[in-house]
Image 1 (cartoon, rainbow, N blue to C red):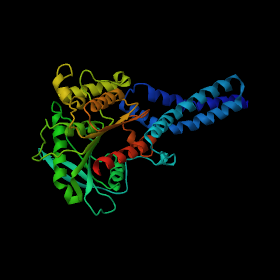
Image 2: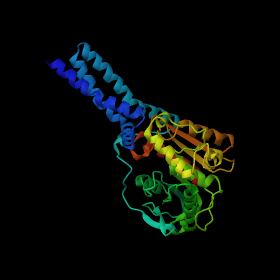
Image 3: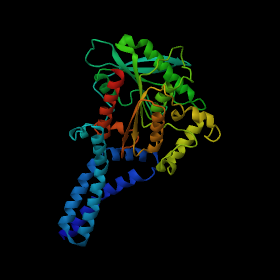
Image 4: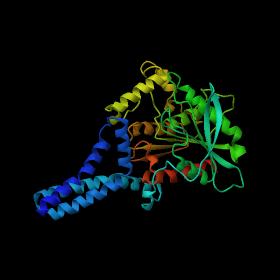
Amino acid sequence: MARPLLSTFSGLLCLPGLLALALVLLPPRSWEVWQYALLTLEFSLWLALPALLGLALALMARGRWGRSLAGINVLLLLLALVPSATLWHTARDEGVPLSLSEYTAGLATSTDRDPLTLTYHRVNDEPLFVDVWEPTEPADEPLPVVVNVHGGAEDLPQSLLPRWDTWLADGGRLVFEVDYRFFPDGAWEESVADVRCALGWVHEHAVEYGGDPDRIAVTGQSAGGLLALLATYTDQTAPSCDTKVPEASAVIAWYSVTDGTANAEIPWRQRHSPVGEELLESSERMVGGSPEELPKEYEAMSPIHLVTPNAPATLVVTAGHDLFVDPEDNRRFTDRLAQEGVDHHHLELPWTEHMFDLNWGGFASQLTRHTIDDFLEQHLNP
């Protein structure tokens, strides 16, 4: 009687791993399903626990069913360890130490203090905000400046993941998180114009908050990374306010698409998901047509086609299992940077999903922090 019961519980403990596999590997049927997939991949190490317990019960059950269930649980255990193991391997290649104890450090959605929120510009009486994050320890000299451009969607505010802002600030930097109009239909340039306006505002006001206006790095996640690249790689878009846009010392693009033309690389899961259809419709509304109909427009909003030898030093952070950005897109982009002789570094994080930085303690986030720290130290504190 005990053996059938042990086999039953062992089989039930296989279910979390099987569900996780489906979430991670199959095209998501909705945005909510994708969010579950993100969390599953980011916290995959926890899936080793039911697999281990299921394996123990299967070994106790013995017999043909016990052996079969033991094999399934061993496979699920190994698969649960794959994301973490590949990131440890990447960290070793990058010379970055990782901490297992930090894995449980929680999410990046809250922090230990609030920013100073200001209005940097108004468009049709609608304010565009900037959050100012200062270090807890006062500095004796002007601090290098980091301007972050959030990703997300139209209804999302600046400082989405404030734990990253305070980490950047407490590393001896003055941080500005900027809002912008999110790609109005048929007028995608307005988002770039707002970011360039924000850069000019930061350059003018950095001294007031203890910053050095001649040492500015621009970072951005997802759509924010695209805007960070477009705002710093070319001056073809005028700022949306009367200001002089400074040259950036460095730019960091996190999981950002760099090619929107008809030749763009599209992830397999996106091509077979209703989410992908929504993204295609959104981009066509934003630009005013398809890549085939408006090739010049899509080329103008593709950083890979804007690279010149004068581009600022660039750090590209790639999520290796990204629903929205094919890793090959970023590889082609960094190849282009290399061809033009642009100082750059490419950090590719295997088995990580878009917005992996939500998990503050995750191995991908730990690796990214070390890499960003080194990159900013090199280019803002020469």
